[in-house]
Image (cartoon, one colour):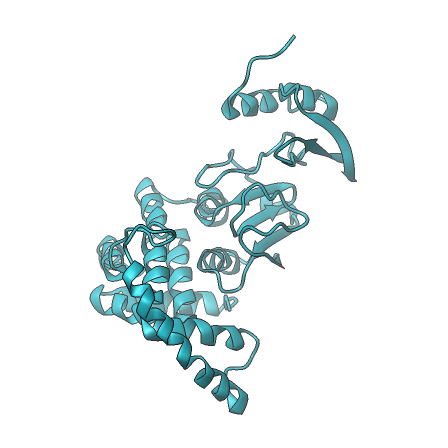
Length: 322
């Protein structure tokens, strides 16, 4: 008998209902007769099940009683256990050092003192130890639980790390700090500026410690010709061609955040919170990339420069994100 096709929501509901069953019963509860499940590894008393399919999607039997399915972009995962970090789980961040969304997540982990292992990864390249059906970065793995997409990572971890999480308005603002908002505008519009491209090129040797001395000076000089790339790229900005999305100027997005700040020390009031760390991570990344748009944003968004300095001092005092 062929079972009717189930939605992802239905599958998750059945998995949760079967959380006390054996691993084989868990596989059956998923209701996927077209899949073959087999034990491919073992982690103590918790077998890890590999789902062989045309998508080559890996489904993990979590230590927390039921399976957490790696999410798609923008898709929230199930609520995480409140004691998730009390058990000192193994945390791995699959990231690229110059990726702005990865800087956001590092700011969150560093401020809340979450130890983690950084694993080099690039978009659309497969890496071991993680489900690769989500092609972008960052990917965060906590024990057997994988969370994809920096915005989802923030929404999922905010209640556990800050104790209160983010309000609906703060969630909307955090979504604005993404590739279709401020972060995307900073990235793409920096490509249309001579010094924006030069700064990006200079960041590579700086990453490896060549930022001063004779060699550092030569690297900085060698980056200058690359700035000419910005000239043809300007014609593609806001064209809707390929990655050049239709976006507002970065300072206009910054002004929205400045208005929401309403003169408070932080977006969460008197104490720094997840939204602060998200926005701080983006600006910190583009400051490292020496983008002239960072100053443009701070000059046109009253109070944002002072807010950034407070955040930088708070995070750096614990652990710098670069």
